[in-house]
Length: 385
Ligand SMILES: Cc1cc2nc3c(=O)[nH]c(=O)nc-3n(C[C@H](O)[C@H](O)[C@H](O)COP(=O)(O)OP(=O)(O)OC[C@H]3O[C@@H](n4cnc5c(N)ncnc54)[C@H](O)[C@@H]3O)c2cc1C
Image 1 (cartoon, rainbow, N blue to C red):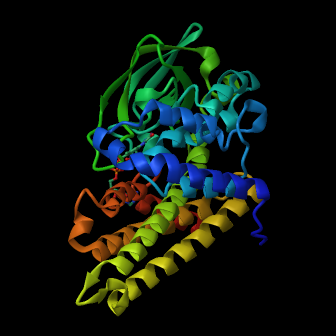
Image 2: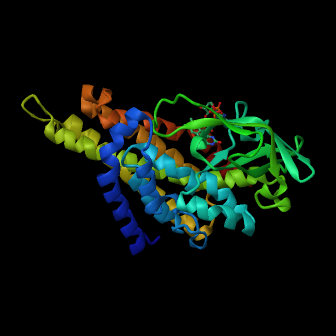
Image 3: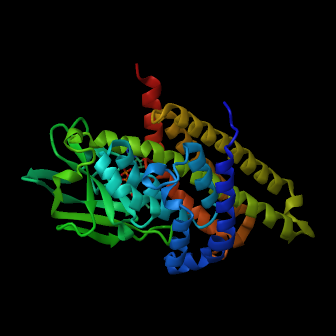
């Protein structure tokens, strides 16, 4: 496998590294305390093209390869995780259904606005009774004349509070469910019967919010079925394809955050003096640093390899995407734990970034398929005929 990275990706990574250092790191703590990203920062993110990393150039995005995207996402994950989360749905969950299955008309209408960040896109699959068991959604869509009438509630929807358009999955055939009975819709803010509900009080990722999406006799034009009439009933397949890509970018965020934790742990170990010498002189600390570095190295190779495979094969990297998310996020959890240990008591306080990463990273093992669901997917792929 050729791991040479095209120059445009190296340059983009360098640009984002500088942006993180100059603009994001200095306000990380402020964003944490205020639970809000200042609008001028979002505007700078728009200017850098961060909302359209994976959207094809013909629709106004940067059209990065999967390798390019994971490298950029890795870089932006080295600061407060809410910044990456803010751009995540435009690049992943909120736009991929359209890119993979949308009609040309839908792509032209929505993708340029999503790519520029003028609009935020979100993704509504999860419901109170349907998390890991996504096929068990209860939201319904019934055709009446030229409109579908949606009823139901979605929960935990990232960026719902700032989104202008949502990809929403609803039951159009109760009997068929995942096998031809779920349809994907584009629902715009302001659609009659559509509202955004209360935000969840999360453990971490402050500065980025998840809310309910509520559909109360919500009237969605027929033209807003993703992919048009031919795709009625194909929503579950679309959702699974979208998640397959998202898993790779979550893995990237885990690798980036873990690298940052290693960097600050090394710095701390060199400067914190106990027993008359820096912590870095202690073999117990050295071994933790060595284990962190080794695990990050392994995870990063896996991530880049899976990304290259996806670039070569298109979308069919189901098993590798699940393996990569599982391995990278579990690795980051272990690294965060060691980082807190190296910082000692300070690592348990809000003044130490390790404390924030520790909480924020916990999510990566839960959303877009828990670690257990990744194992289910991997085992299913291994055991299929
Ligand atoms: C901050 C945040 C942001 C999110 N953003 C979005 C979003 O933008 N859009 C969206 O649609 N959803 C979103 N989600 C929802 C997320 O994808 C789900 O929380 C996740 O898929 C798990 O579902 P659940 O919470 O219902 O857990 P459950 O499915 O109830 O799982 C509970 C436990 O049981 C285990 N389990 C369940 N089934 C199995 C099985 N078959 N085998 C083994 N173990 C199993 C799980 O692994 C887990 O440990 C978000 C969630 C959070 C917390």
